[in-house]
Amino acid sequence: MMRNSYRHTAPQDQADGLRRLFAASRVRFIPVLSNPHVVNGGALLEGLCAAFAELGLHTLVVDAGELSPQPAELAAVDLAACVERLSDQVSYLAARGLPLRHINAHGSAAQFLEAVTDAAPFADVVILHASAAELARMVAQRELRPVLLADTDSQSVTHAYAGMKWLTQRAGLMVYSLLLACPPQLRLAERIAQQISSCADGFLGAVLRDWACLDPRQPASAPMAPELRHLARELLMAAPPGALLESAADTLPLRPMLRGARAAMAAV
Image (cartoon, rainbow, N blue to C red):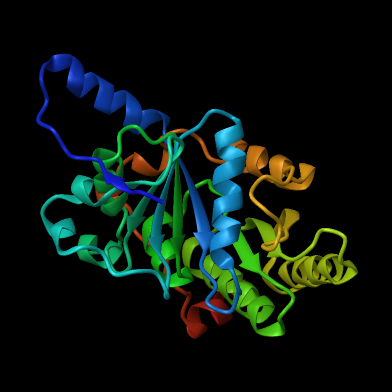
C-alpha cells in the first residue's frame, strides 16, 4: 500500500492555532499493551482501527512496541514528517524508543503525547502501542482503559497478565479490555478471558471490563464482529477527550511502594 507522509506546515493565521488547540482537546488516547508473543498482532491493531473508522474517526497508530520499527532519523527534528498515511482513516508512526526521548526529570514521558498531537492534529484517536514500562511513563494516574493483547499461546497470556500487573502497580490503572487473536467461536478464548479476569480480581484488585476476539485469518472484507464493535465504543467512552494532555509536563509516574512502607500500612 502506498504511504504518503504528512508534512508539518507553518501556521498561516491565528485560526490555525485555534484549530490545533481544538484538535488537542478532542483527541482520545487508547493505550494498547504490546505483546511480542502474539502471532499476527498487527491484525488486532488493524481491527481496532477499522472499528474506529466505522464511527467516522481517523486513527493514528503510535507503534512503540518491543518489535516495532525504529523511527526515522527525521523524528528528532520533524515528527510530523514521519507520520505516514495508510488510508483516509488510518495513519502510522514508527515510534520504538521515541517516548524515552521525552522523559522529564521525574521519569515521565507524558510530554511525548503533546508532540504526537502537534504532529498529527487531524487524528481523532491515538492508539499508543507500547510495552507496559513505556505506557506507565506516558499515562500514569489517568482515567484510561488499556487494551491487553493475547492469543491462545500460554506465553502470550502470561505476558498480557504481567503487563496488567505492571500497569496496576506502576500507573494505577485498574480497568482493562482484552483483544484475543483467535476465532470468536473458540471455547478456549472464553477460558482465557475468565482466567485473566479471575487473576486480575483476586491478585491485583483490577477488573477485566470486556473482551473480544478477532480472527487474524479472516479477510478484510469480512463483517466486523459485534463484540469488537462494542469494545471499540467502550474504549472511546472510557477515554475523555484530551485527558492525557492536561498538565503533561508535571505528570509523575507512580512508583512501587517500598516493602517497609507496605508493612507500615498493613499495620495501621
